[in-house]
Image (cartoon, rainbow, N blue to C red; front, side, top):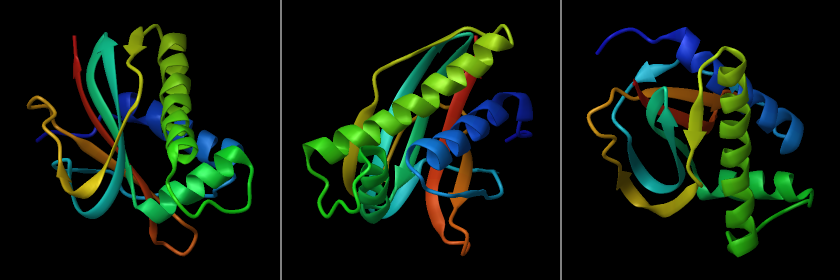
Length: 159
C-alpha cells in the first residue's frame, strides 16, 4: 500500500491528543498506525468528516458506544452519560469537528489549505465505509491500560 506519510498524519495525531486531553479530559496514548480497510465489527459509533482542497478524502473517528458516552460526558463537563441521546451525539460530533478544525489550522500554518465538511455520525453494527479507493491509515489511541479508546482513520489523496 505504501508508506505512512508522517507529514500528513502527524497533524491529525497532534490535534486528536490535544482535544482528547484538554477538551474532553480523556488521557490517551498513541498506538501504532497501520494501513487497513475502514470496516468495524460489533457496535460502533463513527463520525465521518470530509476534507477538500489540497488534500481530499475522509477522516473517520470510530469508537464503541461506551467510549462515545465517555467522550460526550467529558465534552459536556458532566460526570456520566448513560445513553447516546441527541445532546450526547452532538458532543461526539463536536469533538470530531474540533479535532479536524485544529488539524486544518496546523496544515494552514504549513501552507496547506483544506476545507472541512460538517461531521456525520453513524451508529450501527458491522459498519463498512467506501473511501473512494484511497489507502486508509488507522491511528489508534489507547487508554493508559493499553485498551483501545478511539481510532482515527485517515483516507486522503493529494490534489
